[in-house]
Amino acid sequence: MSGPGLTLGRGLIDTDGGRHRDAVLAAPDGRLELALAEAVRVTPGPVRVPPAVRHRVLAACLERVGDYEEPDAALVAALSRGDADLVALAVREALLGPTLALVVRCANPVCAELCDVDLELADLLPDTREPEPEWFVAEAEGVGRVVLRPVTGADDEALEGVPGSPATRTGALMAAVVRAVDVGGDAVPLPDPDAWWALPAPLRTAALVALGRRPLAPTTALQVGCPACRAVNEVRFDPIVLLGRELQAGAGRLLLETHCLAFHYGWSEDAVLDLPRDRRWTYLALLRAQLTGQPLETAVGHG
Image (tube, rainbow, N blue to C red; front, side, top):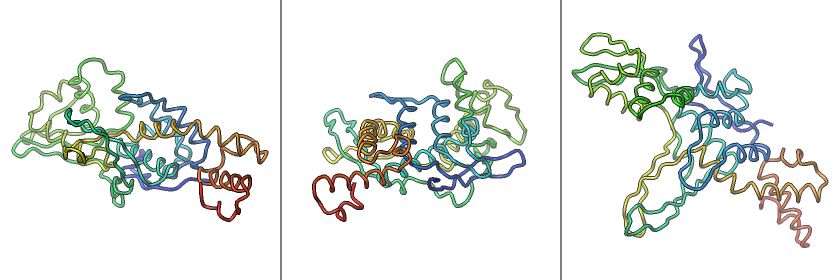
């Protein structure tokens, strides 16, 4: 059984320039829940998932991307950051539903109250009906233009091995994603990170702003008003980290569900993990109704 499909913004671009944007998720069953909970080991506090781990996790979530069946981590690394987040949110919806519940602490030190924020995932997703351009242009009026592409997972993996300051890493990243530079009508090569910092500041700013705004990507930065003091808080979340937190919180319950269904029905662990969450919960509701003497009809559709 396959999972739901989705359309990526950029997709995979093959050597002939062909686009592969139609993706199909792996079946959203207990096996995927368990694999994700174990792969993304999330601890309290700020968390960063290394790019290589991120790509292995997303590869396990995908059955197909265009003509590429069962894409591996290397293929997933070729996706843009925006497409990777899009896959993560699609997996989150398939496993846990369309509503995202966040708990936000007010950044105002006088307040520091907690508030609940409920979001619909559909409101966070970009419009991917039209494909994202393979290359886009950032211009600084009177200075020049830069042709560049979105950042991919492979770029993030490459940055893991770049030592030095944030400026050095920024230069290395821009040297990777910039295709062409024009300053005052003259083409300028960008062979290394130092060449990036030699460009005029307005042109560098235009390119960085374009990277932040132009690629198709889900909204992962929100402004949330505090109901207690009316302060406006900026909330940022990483879809992979969020998914890991939620699934780890339910990993213990998944084992209990597996035990219960295996014990009462005589199923193997593999058979139980092959079931999607809503089907597991329906069987559990039926068991509860039968063991407590309730009409079975009242349990169908309730978890």
